Length: 474
Image (cartoon, rainbow, N blue to C red; front, side, top):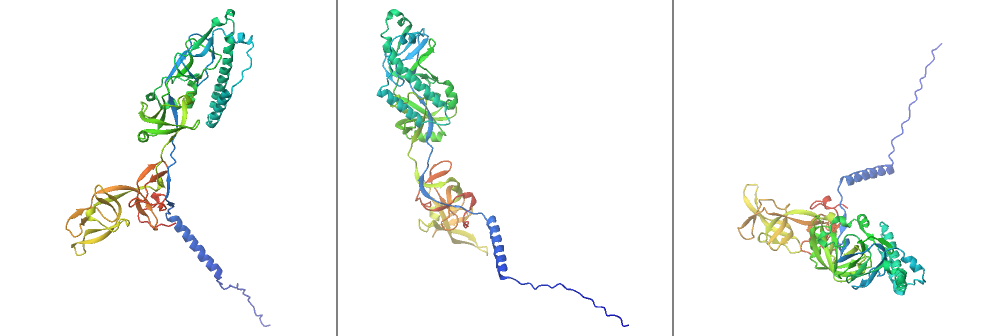
């Protein structure tokens, strides 16, 4: 029997031909391009532009001031309960009745035995109350809620004084035979002045004694004492005080001696009192007190009575702010230049900022020759007759020649200019600036200066992020 033929079945996997889809190919190319661009972007330093505008600095000219007045504390001759009749802030003449002292405390009982009638506030009294409340509301600071209690005590004291005025009329009607008047002492003003019913220990303070710790609010509240009506006073204790001179002053702490000197140089400064928006001119004087800080004294010849009830005042100094081109301080940089005498520089137009010099050089053959080079000019010193030339165009010990002359000059002298990088033309170009005034964030510089900035110029916002002649990638 014939042998059976063996059949071997081999199954081979079918390989599909590679079909390149044009859409996928384009997508891959775009993806790779985007990845490369992102990588290059992250590896490249970028510059933020800033458009130069006209403006002025919003300088913080608001200060907390301490008031200095001629004040005389009047002590009570005997112990007893004080009832005040002169209103606080009222001017009294020498010999006017200010308060009475009830030595026994029985005066109120005697007065209650007679018909006192009703205490009716006059239109003037009501107007004073409204004005006081309006001023307090305007100057109220939520972080200083303790001032609410001071205002409450002040109003209570005023009410008691108004009631005491009615009581005084009744006291005059009491028969002296009942013995009341023998224990009641009438106290009169020893001199002319404005009455105040509070003391704080600063009544004898002079401007040159002011120190930093006096401006601490919490510490001051512990020192201030209100003198309220119908309160018990010890013998020879403070009953009230008189402000005796219309001339007074305020003292404010200033940031530095330089700032203080600038303010003192004004001679007179217009001051706005934030309590009631009152404005007055004060004569300036810089004080260098013993605590190492600097203070400015502003002296006035009026309005003392308006603020007689305040030891501390929030004030604003109304100064004429410098106006010019406003630029951020982050854009300012100092750059070093060579100083070249003007006779060795040929200027190609004042506005171009370009010039030419004749510089000596050595040829490849070792011969000494001269060549005309273009340079950039950044400033001109009229007093010295010298141009500021970028150090990248010249080197120390380079020899320059006058035009049509054998006189030469060796480059060596350097100086520094303050400026910014102008980027109008797509690359960083240094421009000098003249700073008029400055605060922590911005500076005001002169406009339309020679080799300087103009309004609407673009500058590098951060000078540290660019270098001279760098091409700008935005």
